[in-house]
Image (tube, rainbow, N blue to C red; front, side, top):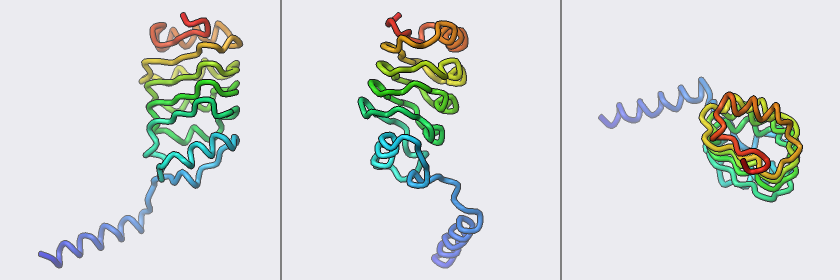
Length: 152
């Protein structure tokens, strides 16, 4: 029996080696914004799929490029940063809560129609968002999910 267990483990390791591990190391990801990079790299996670919550409040983040690789995120808190373009978030379809209050968002709001699992998206304090983009998002996801810049 012991021989079969060892053989099974060897085959498993061999298959893993042969076909590769498709998990993405956080350290292999690149981010345009060094503050975001530092925050992600210091999250305590090794692989991208382990990072399901990110609390980056007031971290002086201005560019989200690279965050699109964190597809396991369910909760993202980016309140009080300097973010203007949120287009990179559109592929994070596992997000359920997205806190974007008090940024400088003007670009990418309508692209969030893909966040079909979201039950809360907060835009409070972002006065530069085009009303048409908010309307598009509310039509797709529901007006009870989207918190407008004025808090309504």
